[in-house]
Image (cartoon, rainbow, N blue to C red; front, side, top):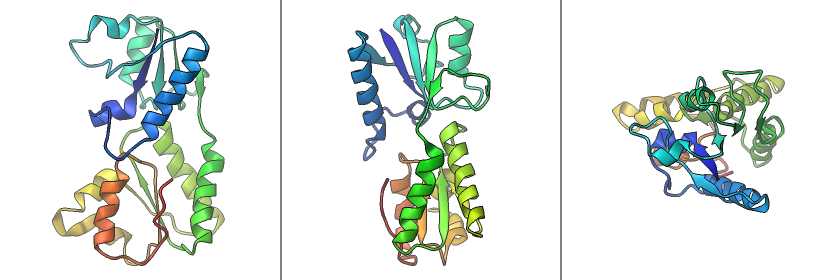
Length: 210
């Protein structure tokens, strides 16, 4: 039996977020691969919670999805000498090699170029607040893409964007009036964040979800 720990869902405190299917796709794909190898998969909620159910740390191994920097879940597994792999690199341990990831270096510029081909010229990146490889690398590749085109990178965390829906839409004023392309690295949050921007009827831009 293999445990799946989805750190982004642990941070949300919700394991079936409405309107977001990316995590279900990951869980389904990993479950299928595990079954092909004669293994069973169990979604395990936050291993740092106390008291932890006895079964939570009694599995044969773990897949940790999107580990955070200095992740306490990794520390627990290391301390107990339980085998694990990660989906997404561990940014706090560059020497750790038992991980896999999507080709973000290719995918992120491809998404941005697609939006540019649709007429967008001014870009804003919205990232999640978790300190994980996806958010860190998305920001890095976005800034590299902007630098190659002589553009000024502008990024904002979803937390700041969410707070902007309160007092004076402060963060939204940072994005306006010229942005035409909004690229989100935080699928669980972007629907709420975009609602703030769309209410202000900003300059038209491709409203595509990736």
